[in-house]
Amino acid sequence: MPYDLKPPSWIAVGRTVRADGSVISVREKPEPALVPVEVPDPKHIKFTTTVYDRDGKPDRQFVRIEADAQERERLWRQFADTLAKDLPQVKPVPPPKTAADDLCAEIPIGDHHYGMYAWWRESGDDYDIKVAESLLYGAIDHFMALGAPAATCLIESLGDFLHYDGMTPETVRSKHRLDSDTRFQKMLEVAMTTFRHIINTALKRYRAVHVIVAGGNHDPASSAMIRTALGHIYEREPRVTIDQSPGDFFYFEFGKCLIGVNHGHQVKMEDLPLIMAEDQPERWGRTLYRHWRTGHIHHARQQIVLAGRDHKRTTVESFRVLPPNEAYATQAGFRSLRDMKMIMLHREFGEQARYTYNPRMLAHHPDVS
Image 1 (cartoon, rainbow, N blue to C red):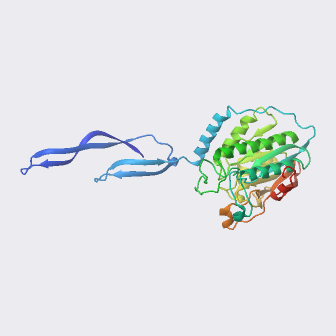
Image 2: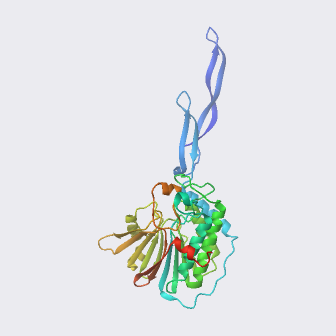
Image 3: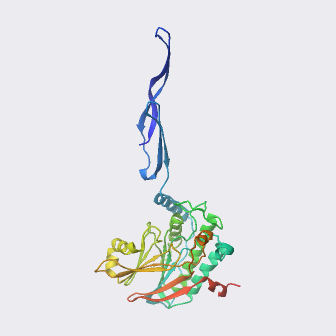
């Protein structure tokens, strides 16, 4: 318990005496009284240092306080709410005339790492904020031109949309130094422009657009800011919904399909089905096709997990990404294919088709010279 030190009384710390034992003078100092003071939640205390006097009594105490990730995200979200009040709000646009009510176009966006820098001589390919923007725009335009005219579109950012979460290019928890391309404010501006482009493009093709922006280990606070801002921008557009769930687990129900979204950096794949059943018992009971979409590991991986003897199977899938490896990942030996998917879901029959976009297709995009 931290304390304030107050001197209610004085104590003798030394004296000068004559040969006959009489006292000439006495040196005194205030005796500290330890009075409890109010402090933040103990989980925010990083460490405490107590200094003792020569008699073994506490003399003074120093408390180092550090907000945890959840508190930091709450403050960022509060900041974003304040900023969002002055953001422009888009006006509703007319829906497309033709759409299949039984179909949903699901677009999982793997870790895009806006703000990451990669050099082709180290990583095999260049990557900066302009390349990142071109790749994602190319993928979205490609998907929007494909597939049946579904009535619903589900856009999922699987986390780590931004490469870092503040003014310093480093990871939030481990403080790992990152190869960065640009400034944090510019990253946010480009990220917001990209999301608006994706949503506005989807509105031209689909009647309803639902957006999930999951937080990752690189951008837990920024993701909260982005979804808060998007919620305000599209507040007047009834055909757009932005999932404002404050946690790390997001869910979307479409007919007999239940989709869960989580970045995947704090939970094992085999644990996700039971988490879905615990979090969404009513939706779990109504659906037959249950799928988890995760990122983080930057390569494709799929598990079919039995959540119990009497339960249907649940698919847990990790998706590839469009960015190349940065120098650190390359030197660590990580190698994987790069692509992005669009999945067509049927309301009654589950997954019906998949479409793939990979970075090599960018060179053949009509907007690229």
